Length: 298
Image (cartoon, rainbow, N blue to C red; front, side, top):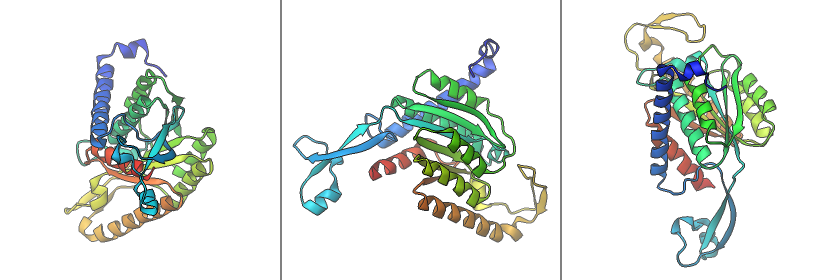
């Protein structure tokens, strides 16, 4: 869906899009700076072969594991995939509206999606976008054109939330729709039944997709810092609860810890990266740290 003439004439619309684009660009600049690497290589790089070291080669490309086995220096050579298809899958459910600081989980996720789209397009990769809550609200097939970025920005700026159903059901539907092997980048708080979520992720892996899950959380959800009598309002239709948080903190943290442990174990078994990110983290630093670690594993 492209912007209508009426939307293009609306200063508020243009201002919102410009703000999201500026935020995404700052994140991109921070990521590339944080990686200390040019040209940028993040997702779409595959190991090709080894060759013997020759004077003048960059030391950072030496494969030290091979050196340890052979006592000889070999360089890792890489080839860029210019036809990688990446799919950004952003959770637009009501629970993503929670905020304790400057950004809600949804705002943080939208900036992350915009930044990742920009990074991928810079690598000449094709990027698509899916927004979901109770159903798949929007699906934009991947394209590699620079102009495609504006369409993604438009959708991210206009995203609206609703209660979600099962993450697993949504992932199954997307796995059936995305037929060509690619890179699946999920941005979500993952609230829901863990086993259903893992079953949906398993469907992506069965289709031979590379899957990265960015688990976006608010610091409050991790630490439960409440001390006074508090009214807890359900963000997805749950009833209100008036409670003394000091009486439920221990049980909350136990259950939330079990939830995260189950996700971590399941993703590890699926060979799927699970990257926990909190909305108070600088996004460029968090993404650069993950991408640097991912490249070390390549």
